[in-house]
Image 1: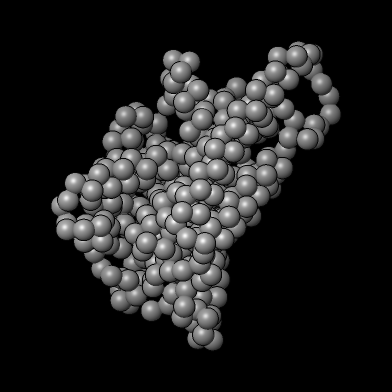
Image 2: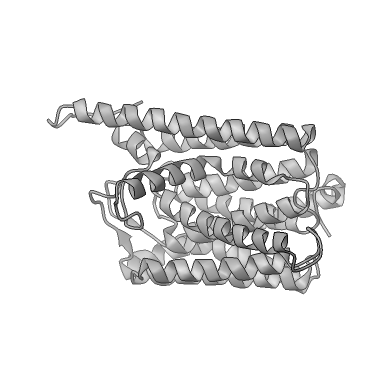
Length: 366
C-alpha cells in the first residue's frame, strides 16, 4: 500500500512517479479525444453576456480526468490497495455526479434535478465514510449531525466548482492545488490522507495536470459540467477523509477551499439578498468582475492559485501547532478573505459605474 509514509522509500517514490505520469498522460490523451468529440457534436459554449470568453469553445473536456479517476479507483479496488466498500461507493458517487453533468452538457437539465442528484450522492458517500465509530457509538446524535453537515458541504462544493468554472484554468487548477496541499500536508503535518487515500489525491493531481494544457492559459476546451462537478466532488471526498483522520481540523479543511468558498458563498448570499435567481448563470463572481475590469484569465487564475497556496501553507503550519491555533488561523484567514471580497467587489462595481460606455480599443491589463 502506497501512502504518505511509504512514498519516502525508493520503491514507493517510483510507484508514485509512475502513477502520476500515467495518470497525466492518459488524462491528456482522453481530453484530446473529448475535444474532437465535442467539435463533431457541436458541443460548444458560445460567447454571451453571461460568459467570460470571446470565442466559441468546446465543452465536456472534464470527461478525461473523470475517466482517469474512475479507472484508477477500479485498479485500486482490484489490486487491494484500498478498502472495498468506501472506495466503491465513492466511485459510484463520482460516476453519478459526472454522469448527470455529462447529460447536462448535451441537453440542459433542470437545476433541481441536478441538485437532487448531488445531495443524494453526497448523503450516500458521507454515510458510508462516517458510518464508523470515530465520533462515538454509531448512531449518536453527533454522528447524525456530522453526516448531515458533511452532506450539505459536499453538495455545496460540487456546485461551487460548477459555479466557479468560468474562466480558463481556474477550476482545474484549484482542484489540483488542493490535492497538492493535502499530499504535502500528509507528509509534513500528519496523516491527512492515510494509506491508499493518498494515491487518490495523487491521481486527482495527475488528472488535472494532464487536462490543464488544454484549458490554460488559453482554453481549447472547457471542463463542462461533467468535469467541474466531478472535481468538486473529489475535493470534498478527500477533505472529508482528511478530517476523519483527526489530522486535519475542519476549519483548516475549509481554509484549503476558501478561494472558491468565499467567492461562491459571498456571491450567492448577495444574489439571495437581492432576490435574484441564484441558480441561473451570471457574471457576479469576483473573478468575473476582475476579468470584466480588464484583467486576463491567466492573471486572475494565477491570483486565485496564490490564494490557495498561501492558505495551504497556513493550514500545514497551523496543523502542526495544534487544534486551537488551527481554528484561530483558519477563522481569521477566512474572515479576511470575506472582507477582501467585499472591498474588491465594491471597488470594481464603483469603477464600472464610472467607466465611460464608449468602446475602448486595445487589450487591458491589471
